Image 1 (cartoon, rainbow, N blue to C red):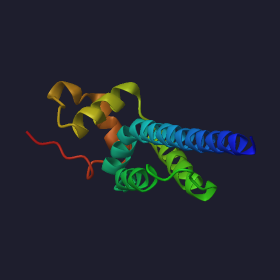
Image 2: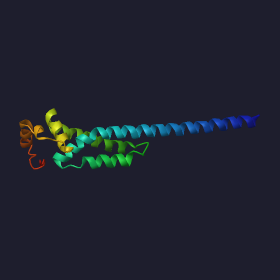
Image 3: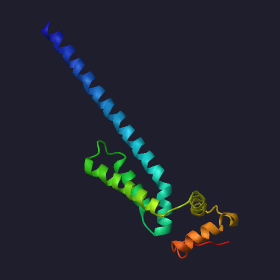
Image 4: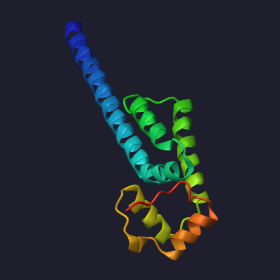
Amino acid sequence: NNEGNYDNMNFKANQTNYDILELKNILKTMWKDKLNNIIDKKKQEASIIDLLEGTNYMNKLNNYFNEYKEKYPVKEVEYRLINNLIEDIDNNFQSLDLTDNIHETIKKIAREKASLADLDDEFFKWIKKNNYSNKIKISF
């Protein structure tokens, strides 16, 4: 009868190991989705900052995603690197002091979808005020 108990315990142990492995896979997928969502939200801001300030945020975002998307669990120091980059992007984006109108115009310029109608006085004043005339090129 002890043999039956042993088989039952062995079955339960195998089931527990399977459950743990399944949970790890679920958590890894959740991490990858969360990281992807965080980075997707910041790509637009990063591309605008890169355009205006000559920074390299888009490459950093892509590198972090590629490096850490399959890495679970992520160490605290690695999570801090990602979090610090996001905070840096947020701070730099806020410092650009964009109105909604200017923000939309910059997005259109970045996608090469801007028209003459998008280039209004507010936009040109903002360029001059922030000394971006040598960083934004407009061609027809």
